Amino acid sequence: MAPHHPSMTAASIALQQRLQAPCRTYVSAPLESLLEVISKEQGIPIWIDRRISKDTKIEIEKQEETLETFLTRAAASVDGALVPVDGVLVIVPKPKQASIEAAYWRLCVSRAGSSLTRIDSMPFGWPDASVPSRIFNEFVGRYGLQELNEATLEYDLWKKFEFRKSSTASISVCLLSGFDLCLADENNHLKIVSLESSGNDAFNVTWLYKASEIKRIGEGHWRDWRTRWPDAVSKATKTGDYSIQAPVAAHRDLVRPLFPVKKPDTKKQGISVFSGPLKGELEVVIRSLAVQAQLEFAPLPLPPKLGSKTIDVTLNNSTIDDILKLIGKESGLEFRRSGQRVEIVLP
Image 1 (cartoon, one colour):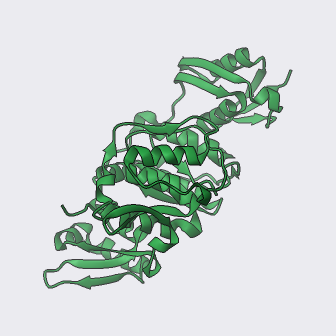
Image 2: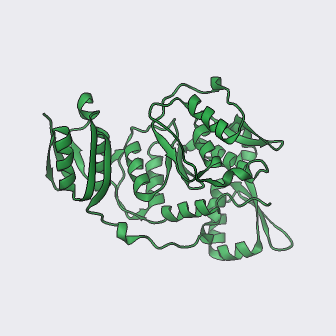
Image 3: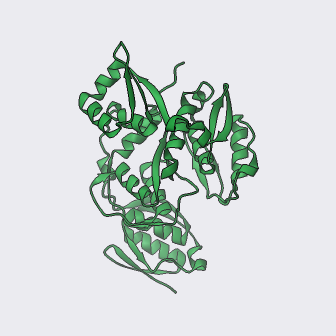
């Protein structure tokens, strides 16, 4: 069976549709806290490469934009780039973007790797403070892959994370790329190899586009795309098809007009009440609330002993003031709110 265009799977299209939705402005916050809130709000799994500085405070000028534009600017502030892999969004170091995308593309279109693009209904995850070697051993065991030489892994501790309805291929990118490794098809067998060795030809990949697809893309977009990607090699066939060799980002840019247009869910705009569980360390809860409700808390950070205190409350159509009272009751703190600014009165 012929492989699918890696940027045109159902999960990839759904992700791109979410990324094209209008984005409300978020206040400044540490990158990891910001992305955790966006991931929860938008229903997008977001993985941050281990080499990205997660604690960096993101300061972005407010403007009307899509979620993709906002996240691109946020990633750029830590020299990062967005890499969508099926339904997962990966934030990677900018210099590594082309090699990671090329490795993922080649895996998806290979004979041995094409089966890994199917969405797995069984979640894959791990608890807080897990070491990568244990996670990797569980991963390769679950999917029948080769054993990984643990000597190639730097020591690390990973926070709790869970992939829900993700493909094996996309999970492999998240786990391996931070160590400059990837899954590759070698003689119809999947192997874990060096990432750089998988990206020959300056990380360009090739795809044959039918004449009907080029027509649907539209003359205007086709012309603009060729201007944006002048180094892409386009070869027309006798039937009017095009064989295009270019970076993965260029292929993704080319097929954008083929995605069905999805109207934004305006019901999610301007949320003023919140429902559901609110659980975690006090400082993490406060920082997440700051991003989600566009509040500015001070002073932060909290004293370590206080900041690590566990908060566990349930919200039921709760306003911001209701939430502050609940957190205050759990933590023993007092919050004095004036507009978007909240003073934390320490005991």
